[in-house]
Image (cartoon, rainbow, N blue to C red; front, top):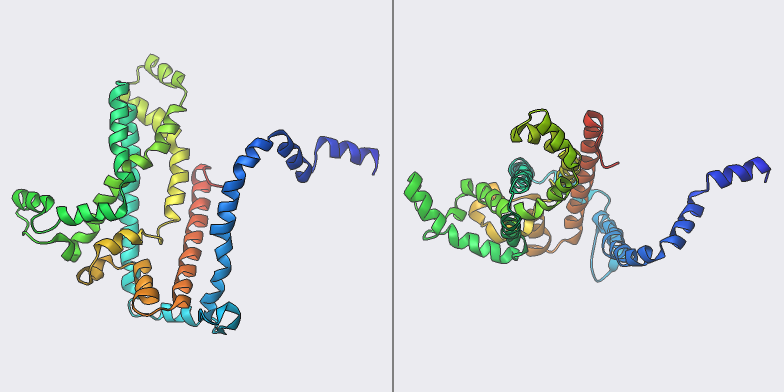
Length: 317
């Protein structure tokens, strides 16, 4: 090795050397990271090997090695399924409705909480808004069923105010999406606002003081300081939200929908569950559709990330 090469290596050490130096310096942090790494390797990356069965007529008794390879058969069956248009329509309707109504609600709540001057009131509002997130989905769905039944409080209230017919709302296809969206906002608005509240606390207070000197009122401060400072966080959360559009929370839908509401409530994940596990056990078909969902979600994240990077310079990578 020449003297010049040694000097270059000293000034710009390789990635491996820099990693070794950092691990030696911060070994405690790396030890703390090991359980997280193990979790992702075992439960996230390890199961990816099971995607192979989407190209097979998988039989549990024969295993992956003994099952027959059928190529793209299950993907073709899914794309030719007569229910596919309905599934795509319902999945996109629920996902886009959640994106339009649920996503901004957490930002608005964070802005409102940030403007409260009483710390006691601020903590109380935060606690009350967080609580629904920790309630089991089964319990939440039970509450929704009680409130929207024929004698439920929501049904009676809407009937008294708007003259709506007294009926079990979960048996009406037209009511399912609004019920799902409203309950989703109630369950997650407080929890989702945490990241925005954290971003708000990081804003330099001198910006507000300078704005006050220039004569800016509270509304002007929010528009020209608070929201622009939140934009990077909003963009990151938006990209992650878009990436989950095709992965609609099927657990909640399965607990709420009935055959009467399949027209508006049946999404890809719930249909796959019925086709793959409930009605006729077909692991290969379910895996193929899950594989398709994962690819679409990845493409959505990639495209959204590219668009946001070009528009404002904020992106995941």
